[in-house]
Image 1 (cartoon, helix red, strand yellow):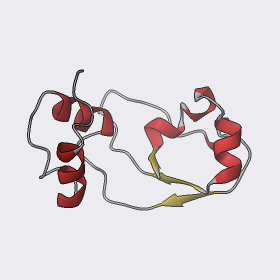
Image 2: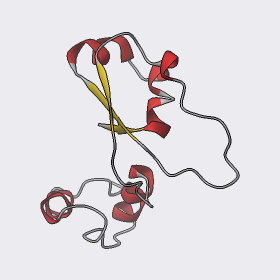
Image 3: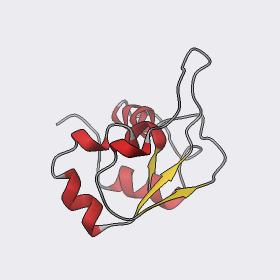
Length: 96
């Protein structure tokens, strides 16, 4: 599952066509800033199964959550508790 903002860039990911053949790509709506225009263009996705998922828009992107984790900030209010613990226990996203 990826946000529509990442889905728009999926064609540029390493081996994106292989990803699209190995997984059903689920695309969640992403809240757009007021200055943003346009709509998501599904034609840019690699060929393969996909589905749209209706979820409440998240106020934080995964990029921002990773940046907060890297800075040592608490993220338990942004992700499920088990995810926050796993990130903390494995020192994910921290500079080496």
